[in-house]
Image 1 (spheres, helix red, strand yellow):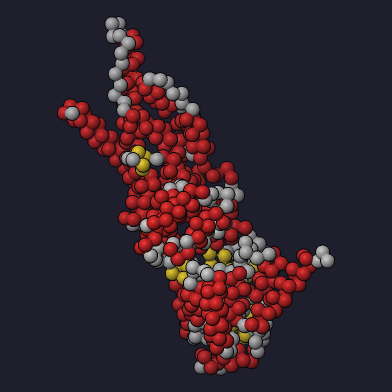
Image 2 (cartoon, one colour):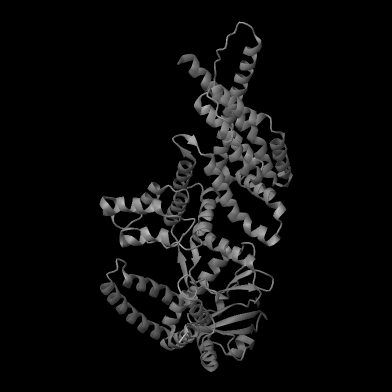
Length: 571
């Protein structure tokens, strides 16, 4: 009857009402699904989103009675005023605005629904039975009952407001200092298993794209930096404050991401983005539950699947397929549309996180930047670009100063490299600069020698070169490093200019032209000097570290020259 669009909305509304009647466990499931626009149609998304904070409230009389019993004081002894009706109602409880009598502080008082634990226990028993039936009929590899058990455990933890208060204080300590993130204080002296009192947050309905960036940055900081993360970040738990900050207001469902999995996930992201599928396959096998999965047809089939994945075109579906195919034999990984940004942040953590002294990550970074002993400058460019995008993009969006991009990015690169946590990357850069300058010296000497032979009579046409193939590679790497120092625009041209070098038949012509690209580019030198004008803006300790770099490079340079001289004398 051509009423499909209209009926979608009608059925979505009916589904929402049914879920409310079924009880809190089903409402929690709907809340999780309502944050996944990639899974459900827009009509259902709109209706299920109403379950995030617009659920029918229970009696205020019952709520006030619960507060008095839990805290052991009368309402008028606790609060000088309290709202006559709840300001919000959710699946497990509802919230009142009040003012503490002693301090005068405006607070939010969350009270648990009566009988909610018994209702959820029954719902989970039913869901667990259904999960067993579905697994048997559908022949799923995944243990669906274990999934229900894990979800049930987190749900019961969420019903303990004392535990939620501990979570909130820990979350505030770890992430409350992030720029434009607000985590309210919690009053432990007024908190029990069924009543929670926290600082009141004035919320704003204004939509702010910048806060999306803040939320993404904060979320990945939770997952990869500290491993303590908010496991229920739906719109009913995240708000914009009147002063433009992102507020987290619910800490019942939290998660722990262990150190070994954080390191492993960062490694997997690095290998996937750089299309190192053999290493990615080993990552998955090393974290699988069964050692048998490392052998046989599954291992070979898995390796064949991965190279066909295209993380740029379809990060979700194609990447999920090889993981899903083998069920429990491999780590179950769900890759969403935020994967590209996530991989960038993972690279940021690898080279810039507080854990960059981890031997495992150092080994991963070195294997990423070197292949068969040769430095891969393109990988360094990719790492720095992606990591700095994760660090600076939110600031650039907020300020909207497009012309400052190059300056901000270079300042971030320099600042990071000169800090203690950038020491590993700094060592690599110093080594590569020394190798490049050494190669440049050899190229210059060969150039002078070649020029001399053209004017000195009776020397003949034979020429002798000190340059090796490795020196040529080091010389090209030096050029790319100089483009990198000159800023993003110059770096963008470096591929064209470097790869645009003609390829003469003789090696001497090649390195002469290569060295000329470094020696006769006043614009490049000018851009580098301009970028270095930000040095006075660096902290004093970073400036001191910068002053020590020339001596470090010179020391490496002398060491290389001495080793080469000794080698040519005795070998």
